[in-house]
Length: 253
Figure 1 (cartoon, rainbow, N blue to C red):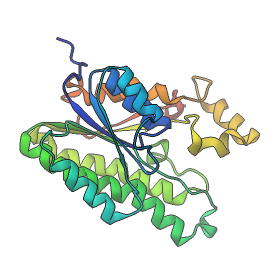
Figure 2: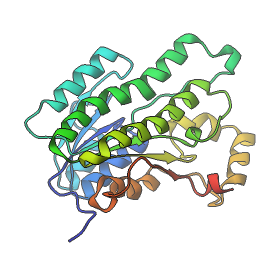
Figure 3: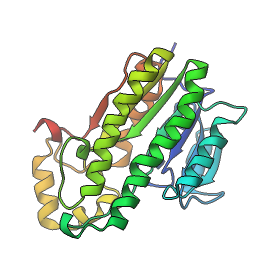
Figure 4: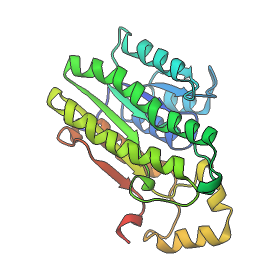
């Protein structure tokens, strides 16, 4: 039997419209999972991620959700947890970033980043995790960051949220592992996405980043594909509470 086979399973992927989330959704579909894609601006039909999922022979449902609105996120959690077909895999990937020196980092930006990157993640994990615990099985994967381990520069809200994700991963694993639910996180390194465009466009910062990465390149979204399928699969059944870096060797430098 193939321990990485996800045939027949249903995965919810947040932030699925582009970047890392889109690559995660595609990888899970190629491994056999049907996909519910959730994003703030996801097209109701005909999106790029939908085309990729259906090309892999799997079903796709699009849900548009504003993760900055706590009430909307709670409603999403209740909807997904109450459906007849249970969610087997939750990929909590949606996120946002605001860059400003700490002394100029506004309350508005802080509150937005913490809500989207941490509070919304807990809300969905709580709703679907309760259902998974009741069934005795399930996989939850958070998207953490290198800034779950480091402080970063000019992103205090993002760093605080991503440190929170690393801690939340451990806290939920401690409670839910005995009930057959795996909670883990992936920590992408410097991946060439919209969130890192400002760094890519800064010649000095980009060079400094590349000089430290042993792999000697920026990552791409597809570099997260294999690790996502692994943590979503039976091959990871004895892995709980870990944050797995996918960083080209950055943290080992």
